[in-house]
Length: 85
Image 1 (cartoon, rainbow, N blue to C red):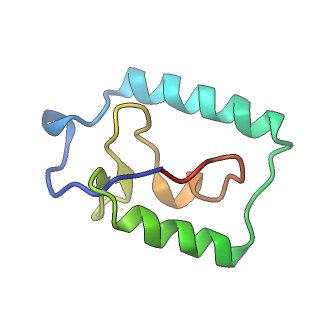
Image 2: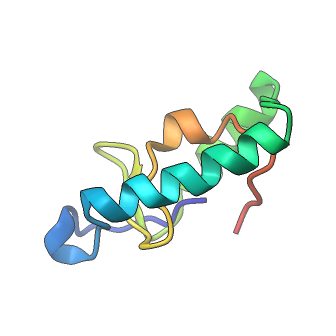
């Protein structure tokens, strides 16, 4: 999902709007194929804790700065198909 990073913003590797849109579209298709399943609260909270320790996670905005992602962690972490890195 997300890796922690003290550096924030696009100048430090955050994907641009177009890349985020493509990444979100791909993830949304996988989410739909997975019958739009969401995690129960305990697993969701566990994912948020894990994401908070990753080097690509902007903790102030809770956005993943990884080039293959760019998600709003608090929303996408509920999707059940996502693996934890």
